[in-house]
Length: 313
Image 1: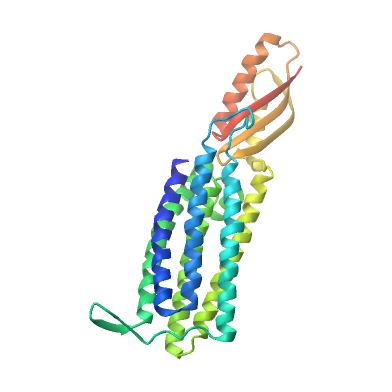
Image 2: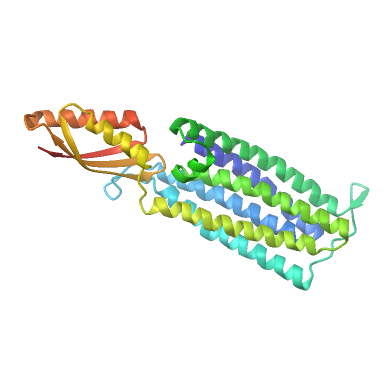
C-alpha cells in the first residue's frame, strides 16, 4: 500500500504543476492541442485525488456492515476516474479539436514579450510541453518501479501478464496514465511544430482530436479493468492451483472438494474450501488442522487475508 501511495503522490505533484503550465500556454497562444492537454492534466490531477481518497477509504477498519473490509473502495474510485474524468475530458478535447479543424481555431499570436524580450508565441508551448515530458517521465519512472517490483514478487513474465493479473489498480492506473500523458504531450508537440513549419494550424487541431480519442480510449480500458475486480475476480488459475495443492498436502487431508478465491481488495483475497479430512481425525483436532491450512495458504501467497474452511469428514 505504501508503494501505491508514493506512486500516486508523485503523479499528483507532477500533474498539478503541468496542468497550470499547460493552461497558461493555452491562454497565451490559443492552441487547441494545449487546451486538450490542459483537460488531460486536469483529469490526471483529479485522478490522483480520487485514488488517494480510495486508498484512505480502503484503510478503514472492518465493521459489521463490511466484514471483509473496505478494500474494494479502490476499485470503485478508479472506476469513477474512468467515467467522470477521462471520459468527460476526452469528449471535451475531441469536441474542441473538431470545431478547430472544421471551423478554424484562434490564430496564434505572432509574438509575446516578457521581461523586455520578444519571442515567437509558440515557444511558450514548446517549453511547457518539454517541461511536461520531464515531469511525466519522473512520475512514470516511479510507477514503473512499483509495477516491476510486483512483477518480480509474483513471478509474472512482464507487463502484459501484469496487466491481466494485477489487482493493485491504483498503481496500474497511475502507470498507464503516466504513459498516456507522455504520449499526449508528444502528440501536442508534433502538432504545434507541424503547424509552425507549414503555416497550417489544422495540425494543431488534429492533435487536439487525437489527444481526446486517447483519453476516451484510456477511459474505456480503465473501466473494463476495474469491472472485473468490482464483479469479484478470482486469483489466476495457476496461483489457485498452488493454493489448492497446499491444502491437499496438509496432513490428514483426504480430498479438497470445492475451492474458491475472490479479491476483496487490491492485495486481499478471500479463500473458501470444502475439505474432507481423515475419518479417524478427532473433532478437537480439526481446528488445529484448519489453522495449519491457513498458515500454508498465506505462505504460498501473502495476499490471502481471509480463509473459510468447511470440514467434511
